[in-house]
Every structure is written in C-alpha cells, then in structure tokens.
Image (cartoon, rainbow, N blue to C red; front, side, top):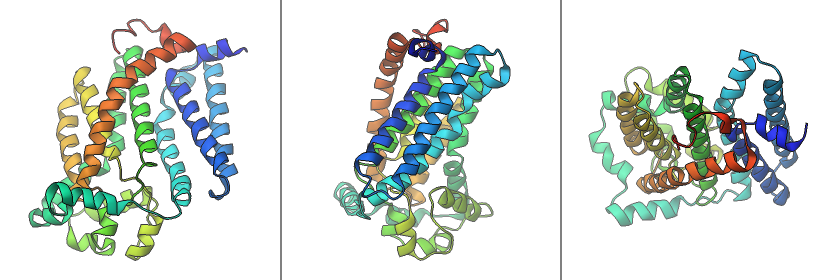
Length: 322
C-alpha cells in the first residue's frame, strides 16, 4: 500500500492525532536528558500511530461495522491518554517551576482580590454539589453530542465535529507549555481542607476524588505533596475553551441536547473558579484559545481534505459544514 492509498483510508482526525504524536515525540527526543523514560513515551506514540494506520487499512479492505465503529470512535479515549502524556513531560521539563505567581498577580491586578477567596462568601452545599457535578461530566458531554450526530448518519458533520474537538483539546494541551501551573486549590487554599471549605451533599467528595485521580493527585496527601504531584494544566482553561467549542457546535448543528449543553456548560465555567481549579485569567486564556480554534479548525480540516484526500473528502456536503 502506497502513501496515497493510506491517506485515503485515514480520517482527517487520524492525521491530526498522528501529527500531534510526532510533535510530542520530537519534544521527548530533544529534551531526553530531562524527561525520565522519554523513550517509552516515544514508543507509545509510534505504536499508536502505527495502530491507527493499520486500523484505517483494515477498514478500507473489510466492510465490517465493528471496524467502522472503532475507527470512528477510538479517538475519544485516546484524547484523554494523550492528556496524561503531558504529565510526564511538562513537570520534569520545567523542573518543578510553576507560574502560579504570574496568574495570581494577573487576577489581583484585574479584580483587586483573589476571586476564589472572594467567592467563598457565596458557598452553599447545594451550589457546590451542582457545580461539582457539572464540572465532572465534562468529557461525557462530548460523547453525548457526538453520539447524537452519529445517529443522524451524517458522517460529514460527525467527522468535522470530531476533528474540531480533537484539534481543540490538542491546542489547549499545547497551551499548558506556556505557563505551567497547578491552580488556586494548591496555592491560595489548603488542598487538604477542600471538603471542609466546600462541602457538598452526597456526591461531591466522590466526584472530587474522580477529578483528582484523573489529574494524578493522590488521596490523603498534604498540600505540598499534592502540588508536586498535580498536573500542570491550569492555563489556558481547557474546560472553558472546550465547553465554548461544544456549545457553539451544538447550536450550529441544532442538537436536541443543545440547551442542556448551554446550561451545564455555563455552570461548568463558573465551577472552574468556584471549585478552585482555575484562576479567572485562565478563563480569559480559554476564550482566546476557543476563538483561535473555531477560526482555524475549518481551514485546517479543508487542508487535510485537499492535500491528503482522506476518507472524509468523499462525504457529500463536506464543504458546506465547515
């Protein structure tokens, strides 16, 4: 199989994921002396890229619904796995140096206070429960919207949606390299006192544990240890950026779930500060990255269609949806 045939079997999102893996591999190779087990990360990226190519080839040769389904949806869990790879790159690359002081100073310059501390006057267990739930189901919302589009059997819209979401996540991930920081729950507040400072009703402690686990923060640790273990993923606010992307796409494609996305998305953005995950300036960064994503995603998508002739270029009406 030559490269032209391979490209025609790939989705545009496949090319995006492979390109992102190559970029991370280059970073690992360039800074191998500072990144422990860098070769393992490179090997994982190469293996994933090869697996994607083999999956695309298998789908092009065999008309099996299972292969089609896996090829269309494998990116959903992979986006989170690539997020975790950053944990093993950013922390050692910056040798534990955080830029929280810069973000704190920016918030104080803008508002004259620390917004997470100022919001403490409005805390209530019911509000805490609602906002923690809205924040925790972040990734699930993209699957809900994607499934609704998938059931419409309009593959042009579905694959542009997947491409835009993956592209958006990767943009936010790369943004973490600019100002790596751990967030106000570790710097302005005592992380170990979070459940006492912000008590919910029933689910909040479990949902917090789930979020902390996903961000590599161990349970029952002191603030200093937790800060050292936490992922440097504060600026820009990927939650803010990607919720704006999701709300925009859900309205554009008139999803039945669009009203829920707008309500839950608005609560989620509030929760980023209320629950002490982000500084407000992180949200501003998320808005900027959102605008960049929505402007550049259609151009990048059309570039892959025209230059690589991926499988997406064969869908009817592909130009109109971008």
